[in-house]
Length: 508
Image (cartoon, rainbow, N blue to C red; front, side, top):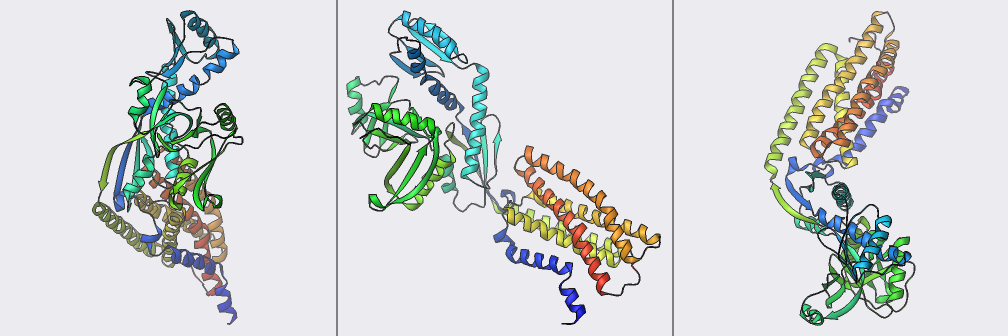
């Protein structure tokens, strides 16, 4: 290899060509490496409604469970029963005097709650402003849980309590719906009694349960328990699927509670030695081991009938967190791919027409330098596609619009550089010095223009939803690609030409 060929092989341009070749190797075929939005390939729109009243009830339950401790510290008589009714904590005492004395102490101990006393009953409730705040938080927290479970799936809030989920090109939407619909609400409660039917358990209560008791189904029949759990999935620290050799090589799910949960779990198992402990998931008792000793450390294991897949799915659901409030499917819409195929075709046509017109303009106005600008533009589009594939960001119809916009922005950077080179040549500078000065002087203007546009893209991404975010991501990738191609790749083309060819005159 002679000196000239060696210099070409190890030039800056070779580096950019190798990067592009590697990127395109992993990018092709596009249909397998790029993710497309629902507006291009069709799919399913799901609308969920968050039962926000249940979130308010859950917050009231936490407040209710602290009532006994507060009354004990004040040496007051404890209520004979506690339950939630119409978004209010209802405390029933044995006498009117006990209720009034308890109300005085609870007024100062639970200042965030409104209070009313009627005979031997004390009612506590959240103010309206707090109720609205809890409901808003329930929707936003449920969205966070869904985004953890369904990575890279567009999820957005609609209205006050609805959530919209896009499932583009989903092969099995029912499987996705099953995962979305699972609340993964974990509870640990002591079992009062087990029976083969609900009627058997209701017999002792003459057919009507107290307000603080309930019957839940399970794998071994029906279970009578306290209605409100002191240890829940909110206290979960971590969950994982394991393979337990000590249990005959069974797949199990183990989870660990946080410090508060561990303490409450120890108290629960200490007080109820010898009684069954119900492990409840979404209102179903999946296991009921007997408490043989107080359990410290907050480590709990669920076993029985798990496959590797089901154990991993349960661990994922528990680890991602339970819904703050349950959800229901309100609407399901299927979108066929025919409209998307037409959008892709029209988007490609618009890109090709734009590229063709820019090619003619660049070649006519800037000659060989115009060809370099066009090559930088092609490299720019390749970088955008590689960025979308690497980030696994779905390409949407607004994203295609962002790519078309990037075409104009990228050629604008080349024009700025060329105009500065023209000015230097008109001053009598040599070609190499003019090219070097042109890139140097244009850099500040290009950076200023693109950084301000990039900031707009960041704002659109943070405050926009689905389609707007798709446009913002493509635009931001296009800006980064424009800076790379305009300030580095294009300069490498000029450097390669000037170093390897005897250029006497630069027509620009």
